[in-house]
Figure (cartoon, rainbow, N blue to C red):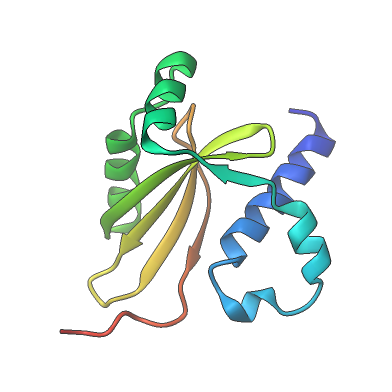
Length: 123
C-alpha cells in the first residue's frame, strides 16, 4: 500500500470503529461519512472470498482475538473496507464490556480496537 492509501485506509478504519459509539460521532460528520466505504459480505460471499483470496478462516481470527483480548468472541464479519478486506470482530469481556476489533483478513494482524462505553447489563 502507498502512504496515501495507508492514510485513507486508517481514516476509514477509525471511522468504522468510531461508528459504534454515538459520542464518537460528534464533530465532522461529513468527513466521517466520506471516509467510510465499508461493505460487509453475506455468509455465501464470505465463503467465496475466503476461498478465492486465501484469507484466514473466521474461526482462526476469532480464536486469536479472543486470546489477545482475554474475552469471549461473539462474531466475525468479513468486510470490504476501501481496497482491503478485514474481519470486524465483536468480543465480550467478563465484566460485560463489549469490544469491537478489526483484523486484516489476509494476515490476521490486529488493525484496531474500540471498547464500547457501556457494559452490558448483568443477568
